[in-house]
Length: 188
Image (tube, rainbow, N blue to C red):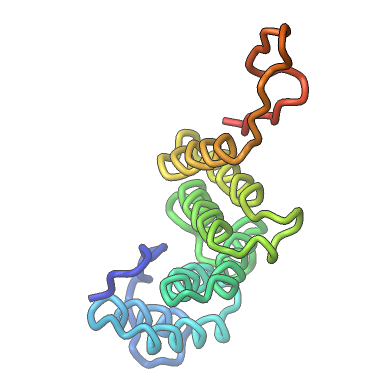
């Protein structure tokens, strides 16, 4: 059985195993992944589903999860972003999730986690962590108190605080926390 990243979306009703419809390809991808752990076969099915219906966000989301598990972070991030874009614009032929806010929140969480795994050279500003924090903020904007996003933001704030240079107060000036010139704390 598949033990990688959690799969997103639900299986479409009335499974057709003809391999011709995008929903069938998506369902087949989930089935081979969940029952037999066949990652490469699942990727082929998800790709076929996307070719059949480019707006099938669950196929993009699950392709991202599988690619992330294989270590292809850039491809996973692209697939994850495509799933987010489809849901945000409410694209034609895109299945409606039962809880759009939760799905978007989970996708933004995945994007943040992927951004944290990217080398700093792949992001503007020399660090991907601010971009990851933005993704976690978007997750929280969709579901206030999203546990994974909240925990990730707290962890990033701690990392930023540890990485921030600590300058002792000049002699005779009894420095205080948050003094001018101190790095700003990350937004909660």
